[in-house]
Length: 119
Image 1 (cartoon, rainbow, N blue to C red):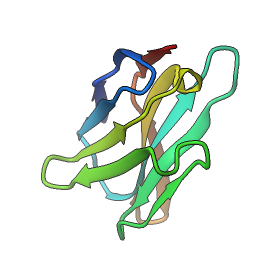
Image 2 (cartoon, rainbow, N blue to C red):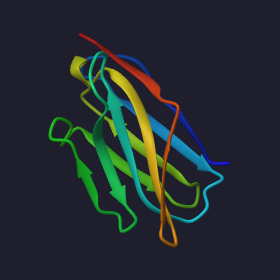
Image 3 (cartoon, rainbow, N blue to C red):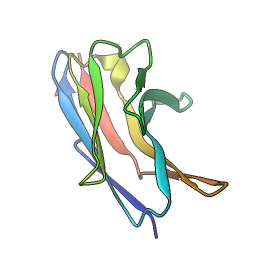
Image 4 (tube, one colour):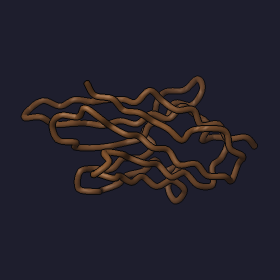
């Protein structure tokens, strides 16, 4: 059974930093992509950052220059370093893993971790 366990969320003042972690277990197949999404209150879930199997990264325009996605393959963990946090970054953050096994593609989500930025 695949499990994604997130940690690192919390309450921080504007300008502060947080580091989110997402540890995966039970993965079968090849991990094709890892990512972080967020869902602000009353809004739809949106992509924050992604990192491919070839280490190519992509970011939402709103977080470029402030957030950094990285991974530790040995620990099967993906991280999101968030600096200079702003109130608009307040959201539930979800990690996401896409795996490939033959012609089958699977998508897994973490349970979400709350990030609250006070002004």
